[in-house]
Length: 238
Image (cartoon, rainbow, N blue to C red; front, side):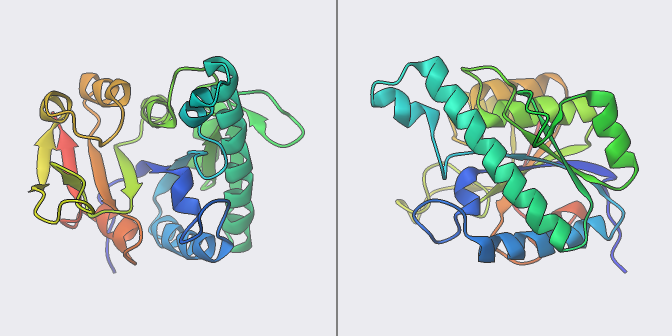
């Protein structure tokens, strides 16, 4: 039986990941696939926290371009992450995994308020904790929320799930010859302006020595493989 090299991880999912091959919204077929992938990790005894984006429903930056005030646009984006988190919770629980949603914006009827000690207690009891509504503040992305929550729950690694195999020098979908990095430093990610995560989250991980693994979510078994220490994706570290 394969053995995990991490005991507690933070999985960062973009909102776009939840839409699968659709142009927007939620693809529940893909969500079921995602639940099965996460269950493989949970079955290894790994404690899992999740941060989900909201770009499949609302993207604050795009709304701002349309004339919406930045703060209002970001709050709308935060609410979109709550919708995604509740959908993910439902799918995970149908797959047999106890799950809690904690929201940085208080809405007690649908989610617990974010309380770090309660979140850690849920993890220790084998529950998946989905952190919704970003940091609860405008001008901060869900990437930054993922880095922050990872620090707070003392995760050993931040798993950045994407639609490409790892970190490239340029967009591999546009440039097939783009340079691929098996590993790269936080400083190089920032200096080369690589679009791994936003600069605030990269800096936060660098300053707190939290490694990031960037990998392709759409390849079956990748989440489990990363957690078991296999050479999958790109490792970003100090």
